Amino acid sequence: MQDLRQRVIGAPEISTDGFHPYKTAIRDARANHGVIVKTYSVTNLAVKDAARR
Image (cartoon, rainbow, N blue to C red; front, side):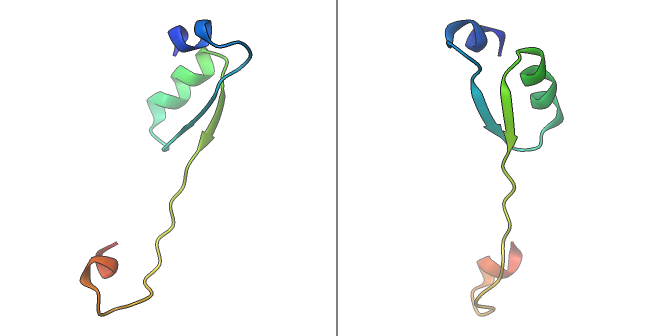
């Protein structure tokens, strides 16, 4: 993160999942941070892959 911060003009914007070590590293590098949250819904119960999500 520090290397990225030194190479980018301005504050980089980083999007990650909610893994805690990312938050600390991005905060220490003084970058903007957003967390991506995925929401799944089942629209067809006949499809077993959708039911497992």
